[in-house]
Image 1: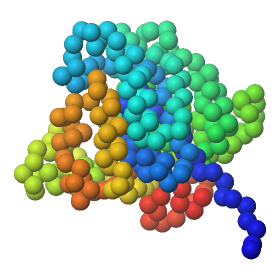
Image 2 (image 1 turned 90 degrees about the vertical axis):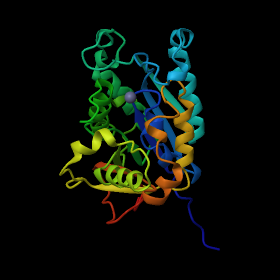
Image 3 (image 1 turned 120 degrees about the vertical axis):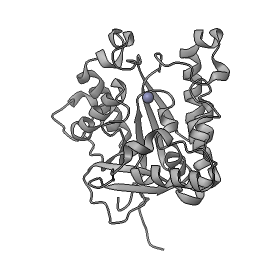
Image 4 (image 1 turned 135 degrees about the vertical axis):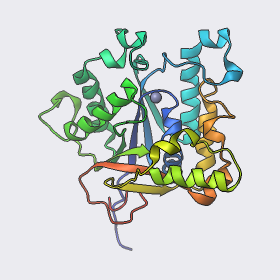
Length: 288
Ligand SMILES: [Zn+2]
């Protein structure tokens, strides 16, 4: 019998800004990889303290009072549903939407030294050695300062973790193979919108569709991961964020069966890679 060394463990590190972002951006994909034995680790930068209660059924003073604690519980429940093996909370405070009082809080992510935050992320990458990291794109549609911070940090992390001259105290350099961002593509929005209209359902994208006039996904390298088997797991993770997600709202307007029928994918934009992505790949780890 031929001897062989076992394949190295596949590891995926997902970096998110607030509790619930891990469930609204690429959750079904992480669930898909976790089920396939990939070691999936979640980093959540802030506690979401500046968030409102977005589920009308829970908009009560006693819930508002415990919001920080509840969001933390929701985060851990959602991470368990998705299949994350570890949750790392960086512990910064939510910086709030642009031009709000939360921006000025001394513990806000926006006011933390980027050198310090990056150094902590570099230490994590060097300890975990992920092949794939998920960060954010430039978030034109949702310019929350914490989301923009994750965008900037994820790009810097890709270079810094591999560079032994940077943060030498944070461990031996590790070159992440690929950095992706979960994205709402034009093709996905159009396909789901049309499917809703065709079926006489209310489209969740009614407010977006006009602004997409003439828009395309051209110029982006995209990978569509087939998540037909884990779409419902992703929705269960969203539902775990009881204070943030209206079970009758945006995320649930299209029945899972319709999504599975017309667009059973989650799309990822390739932001950086050290290993060429095979043409037509449907796997973030393709060729690694
Ligand atoms: Zn967020």
